[in-house]
Length: 462
Image (cartoon, rainbow, N blue to C red; front, side, top):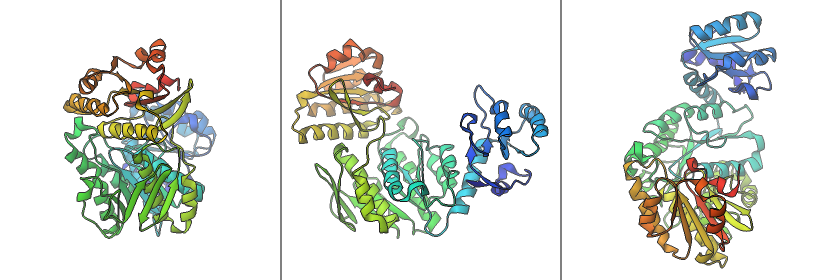
């Protein structure tokens, strides 16, 4: 719910007519249900101004659109026919949305109200989903969190604009593909607390190497310190060699699987233990791999730190979390257990997921010979992509009895590293009779690759 008087604080809307009232924000004519501020983002093929008639008849209080002769010609008769609606021309609707998001969150932030932001190479969405799940178990709709992975220059301000006066915490995921994007998002959201999950080989075609990834993702730490004069809550992963370099500030709390941190995290067959500043054992048999168990521990630590009075409720809620679709998800398909992680992939997340999968099998008494592994391309790795695929292929040698298939344009490099395995041009080539043949006699299937390969189609997910 946004106070429309804040529009006057947006430089992009300088000279806009005064607008009053508090309304939700909508940017999709198909989802418009109640009187809302409508943001007319120009589409590649459709102009939303040509479809807002029903919105105006439904009492739309204000429409923000990009100025220009074409749009002004469309708006002129609409303005005359619907004098109750304020039409606000701006140079760029995206820039305006960012400005409005910032004005809105600044008006909301006070006292213990926090924007908790999450950046990092791997696990951002998983941490966000886990943390939001725990918080919502106690606070319900007083929590606003990034939907799906809408974590970019538009998704972040639109998430902020969902904050209401009743909201107590906003959990934001911050994504970056290019240098400088995390700073832009921090300038918009002004986070007062946060977590950088880890630093890995992601989007190297734009960053070049992991040191530049650290410079980008780690900016969140500096942004929180700037916003809070060094007192903002920040969870520091001491197991990451890059993040361990960050200088501790007053609001920093550290965690590690080793000693010397504020929190010591120990994965167990049933879940994970936390010791140090807090002591708890979280039980969740649906989590696969030490990394996901650690993710849950960190989410629990954050929730407890933000709302200490509800520690027991967060502990109870932790056992009920289930992975979201296509992300570290166990499913049954044609009598086989399938571990599906077909949303994203990079070298570190691929190796971590493989280790988690085979550890899960080992704990339950299953041999490697009962496993079939499907690895798809890891995209956005730049010039080093062939070597990174070779390294993951070599990593797979740890489980020589597993049956392995590689899918995509980098399949040959995977094969070079492994010294074997089958290669398929795309997911379609592995479907049907080939899938039946490949998985025959194997009761546990691992499937992971970048989203563009649509590996979920192998197990008939739509």
